[in-house]
Length: 84
Image: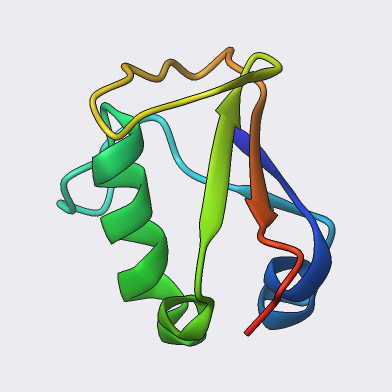
């Protein structure tokens, strides 16, 4: 799954995109919805927790934590304009 990153999120990760595995080869629980994706990303990149607000979009629509995500979805992390 590829995630598009903007603003401070892009700076924290060090890239405009991030690939998240969609098969469980590592034994870690993989994200199935936006809320689980947030937890996965915050655990992988703890600096993301410092951002005041991050909007997640799935297929060009703002998404809630319960929104199901699939490997083929276009996902974007959009920090609020106020930044950190």
